[in-house]
Amino acid sequence: MSTQKGDEQMRGEGVQPRPEKRDDVAAQAQGGEADQNDRSGRSGKSDQDDQDSDAYAILADQPEKEKKTLKGKIIELENTINTKIVQLQKELNETKENRQTQDDFNFADILKEFKEEITQKINQVTQAIEKKVEEQNLKHAKLFSILVSLKNENFTISKSISLLNDKIHMIEGEIGE
Image (cartoon, rainbow, N blue to C red):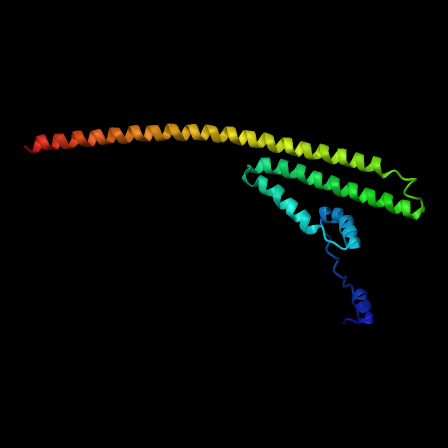
């Protein structure tokens, strides 16, 4: 029943059409970026995926709790960038609709503000990552010192066992004679 009449009958009989699936919030936020990329004839999705995979590759060795905070900050940075892009697109569209010339609209201030905001977010994420790396380095140094002490203890125990075996063989030799 793919005809219009068949569809009307299905609705009339209480059959509801399936609701369309909706993308998550991040996909919706990137929708503006995708529209811009479609207009320019290129796809920024692969560049975005490369950046995401690089950012998340750094987090691969972090404990779960630390991953969540760093991923959250990275996602916040991505959302800020996407929001700012959408805002700039809206302002540009408004300018075109009002038929103002580019000379009347000062993009330099907007771009400077955008750059400062993004730089600040990047610095925050970088500082958080550096802090986690320092913490991991301290943990690794402690684990290495523990490993060295265990190796020394293992050597001492092996040496003691060897001496005990020698004494046992000497005693067995004396008993056997």
